[in-house]
Amino acid sequence: MKDQARARTESMRAERAAQAARQKRNQRMFAIGGGVVILGLLIAIVLAVVNASGGGNGGRDTKADGRVVVPANVVDGVIPVGEEEAPVTVDLYYDYMCPACGAFEASNADDLTSLIEAGTVKVNLRMMNFLDAQSNGTQYSTRAGNALATVANDAPEAVWDLHNALYANQPAEGTEGLSDEEIASIATSVGVPADVADSFTDGTYRGWVAQSNQAAAEAGVNSTPTVKIDGETFEGNWAEPGVLAAAVEAAAE
Image 1 (cartoon, one colour):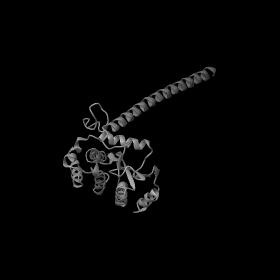
Image 2 (image 1 turned 180 degrees about the horizontal axis):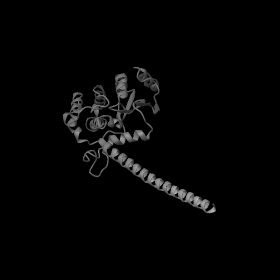
Image 3 (image 1 turned 45 degrees about the vertical axis):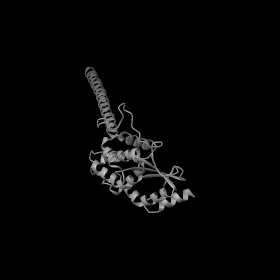
Image 4 (image 1 turned 90 degrees about the horizontal axis):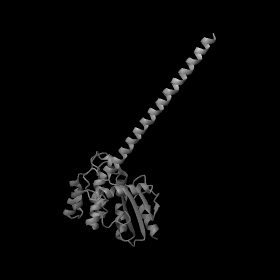
């Protein structure tokens, strides 16, 4: 009996040792597998950033030394529209593929144009391109942003008109968006010189658009449109015509 008990005890110990060994092996395999998954995700993120910044298009969006090309007339990372001395500043974070941004423009573009012309407001355009993934691989948000940045560099007087025209002709989210030729045609229709519009396909400022998007994300902007009046997030109903304009006028007073 003692021999049988001893044998059972030794068998149980052997089974526990084998189970512990299997558990350690499984833990090692899980750790290795998890590491592979994490590495894969990191690689995917890096590739996404590179593609978003134009790194996959032959380097057209950067200088030969790899630096992002910043458009002329950009101030502190934004494209300003209106008089520098205007009493009120509106910061507008937007994406050209964003449907809500299109609704914002429909409700407020005319009011903002009037306020700009009256010298009441300066609008800081802070473009984003996080909806590139919603244009079936064409990176529409980046291409449209690059077009505006090109105009800011070469024909700054047409920036606001092109910004509004891109929304007036906004493609639906989930489509390929406008072609480069269509963007160029819209640009020339609002006074952008043909040679400037023809240069959109150079992609000179694609990297800068990605940088602008990153800066917005780092500033805590997680949705578009985000509107700030003199640095404070506007919480009013911008969808109702006149509400934003009234807030701007009140700030001016």
